[in-house]
Image (cartoon, rainbow over all chains, first blue to last red; front, side, top):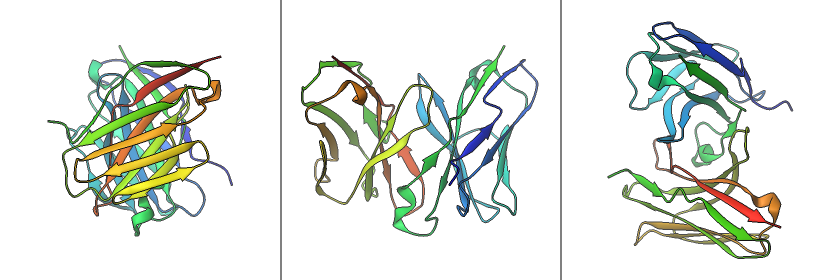
Length: 116
Length: 110
């Protein structure tokens, strides 16, 4: 099976712009989670989608949003970019979205976003 | 106080050493305790998990959870240069939400 894929892998944007990142989960996985990873804050949870519905949300401003499509692919959008949004954005999918085994997350390689 | 605290290191050890990685947490609702490993320029991968308290062993790796102290550990025996990576502890309650530590960067020197 192919792993979790994320596009693009690298992105450079200017402050004030918006950006859309894409994630394709492993085939058959219906849950997709998004995380932001920075050296200072580590890996922080953004939100999780299961069957096209946002099931959980982290403590990020409303500029961060996401959605999931019927084929389980997911996108996240960041509007009005700030310098502090520079980070590695990771997507993960889970084969067990309704059991305790939800801890079993499969991560993609991430999208490195740089805001200048 | 952050929900999960992890010493970021870095930690540098010689090949063959025993490595001890630790995390503390404050949320009593956590039931599942995981260790993820992240190589440079890669996403994290699940290494081990433990449900509730106790020990779990898998080859050279042992995970321990002490819920009374809110403390978890990962031990690596006979460490190898290929173990060089960032190790992230993660925890989950019943709400399908993972909370990660900041990660500890480990370097095993040949």
